[in-house]
Amino acid sequence: MALALVRSRSRNATIPYSTFRLVGTKSSTLSEGTDELPLSGVRVLELGQLIAGPFCGQLLGHFGAEIIKVEPPSGGDPLRVWRELDIDGVSPWFRSIGRNKKSVAIDLRNDEGRELVKQLAAKTDVVIENFKPGTLEKWGLGPAALQLLNPSLIFTRVSGYGQTGPWSSRPGYASVCEAESGFRYINGFVDPETNLLSGPPVRPNISLGDSVAGLHAAFGTVLALLSREKKALQGKKSSQTVDVSIMESMLNLMEGIVPEYDRKGKVRGPSGSSVTGIVPTNAYPCLPSPSTPSCPTYIIIGANGDTLYARLMRAIGREDLIGPLYAQNHHRVARQAEIEDAISSWTSARPAEGVLAVLDKAGVPVGRVVGVKDIVENEQVKARGAVEDVWVGKEDGWNVKMPGVFPILEGSEAKTRWAGPDLGEHTDEVLTNELGLDANELARLRRDGVIG
Image 1: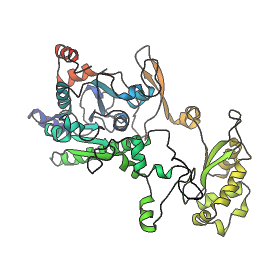
Image 2 (image 1 turned 180 degrees about the vertical axis):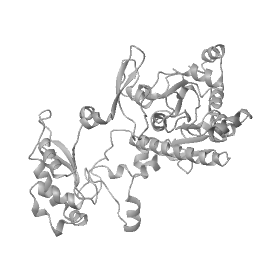
Image 3 (image 1 turned 90 degrees about the vertical axis):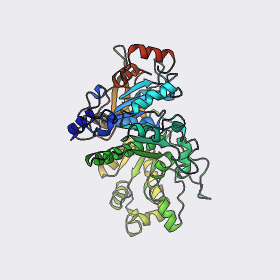
Image 4 (image 1 turned 120 degrees about the vertical axis):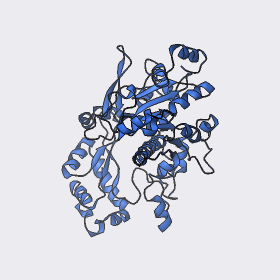
């Protein structure tokens, strides 16, 4: 089928490139080495920056999509200089989130630059962007404009609150959207007198909302690709916009909070290191380790299943807390303070290693609260290749450790093929191979500041 459709294109050169291209067909030399990956043959034009849009691009690129990342010539993606900088002045964080991507430096504020992007979009399957809603429309690069050039273009948009609604024009930073989704309200320690937050909410020390939105964007993009392929098999052309909101992505994680409020009038509040209404699952103190003699170490125990709870009580010598009064979760919730005190009293008198040994033997889920050094050295992480060494630069480069990209698909050799590229590293390659620009035209565009 794919071969027949590609032949159809040769008889009608006015039809956009991606209209007839099905998932899995070859798009250009830029995707060499990815033929067997699930998204091989899918071309993605990444217009986003920072985290949410680029994280979506990273996921798609890992599984074979060809990612052409468009960056401003003056400085590139701001993430290039966020947090720690490497010996070349570029953030290792960017090298990780920019992996498997081609960097093309084009000024979107320039008329000629926007025309180049339009030409690339006409030969693209997916556009990813995470600008403030209305920005691309102002530049003539919104879905309505680009889908006229490419009737089968998928346009994946990530914003704070979505493309519609009274809040759509608000700046959409993940931290604010996490708060507006209700996520921040349930994260913190509770004031026992008011049952409300004691002090400000606790923020996870990562850009959680951005990454969760990026996951939703990648999922939505793959769904749109599947939908387009089905319609192509029916001889239909299909464009689609994937509208991802950071706030809604976080709301999607909120489990039973909305239906519980609707049906029972319950407002779930903060719960410290436990989970409201599930007992026992919590963080428990152990004796300090030799490396941190002034601070307790913490382990997490998850024994909220009825059988697991009984195993835990036997392991810590508290059979008195087993029986009809503790048999099911709702019984234990009513006696949470008593149960938590018994567990904490037992763990706090022992080093973490001793607690782990006893509970592992008893078959109780338990784990340490660890930092990045422990993660990198972890035997399970090493056995699974969950942290990988990726080469940066040319012959005189260096390795950077990065978390792997997951999930692992059986029979798929998805891997990091190269680290995040230097700014504009592939400008000439892409504009020459895909748009047919010659050396003189490239030189003129570079002199005029259109490309970098």
